[in-house]
Length: 329
Image (cartoon, rainbow, N blue to C red; front, side, top):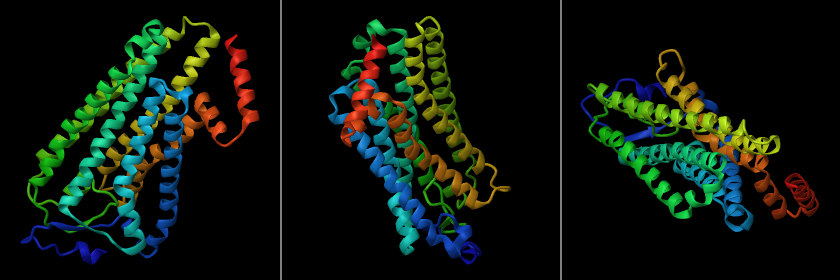
């Protein structure tokens, strides 16, 4: 591995690279195929099953569940953008990637991840309207309005991320042709750049900070308003509202915390090994997709009941339905 990085040919600009994640364990790197394959299979199966249940179960046809379904779709899209390539590299040493393919992968990942942040905001908006303005909920959160918000969120992600990836097309790469990561990321690719790249790095940092700060503040404001409103509800209604919101908050904290951790680790590259940087990237991209189905599948009662019906646990479903009916009386 060191021989690939050393003695870079600065008279030649690279357009083909080797995408080599977890390079510090070269001798046993192939063994990573098994755990990452299991994680990917879990992501595919769990998210797909929950998407299916939300789409076919008539009791899950409300904006909140549609947004949860959209989050699961984001999980599938993001992981599928890079995991097949990474697994092929681990199993068969198929690590080659062109600059164009790397930039395309980066664009899709960044657009999807930014869109995920906005989906979390839409979920907070849905809960805010449901709890703070319950009488107007069905007039505000219509399918048309939800579709408009989703398309606007996707357009926002494209507009924010396209300039970052475009700027990378203006950079020349001559330091090495080995990307020490399992996925094409802006910071990892720019390490191989020639010349002054401070402007490209600054723009990328500003965009990432704006997204994190703006979305984080809006999210905090939404849930503070919800918390204030629940103080005036009856205990039973308050507990139900807080229980539903707690699932969203856990997911939001996990996504934002892993994003901040990944950004910090990349900027401490002199004191953090490449494998640790790869690990934080894996946490950032894979942890939400792995944990989200578990959180929503177990903590959201209606989804849990739907899963029980799917697997034929009628006794448990009837008991849950009885409990829900008793609680509503």
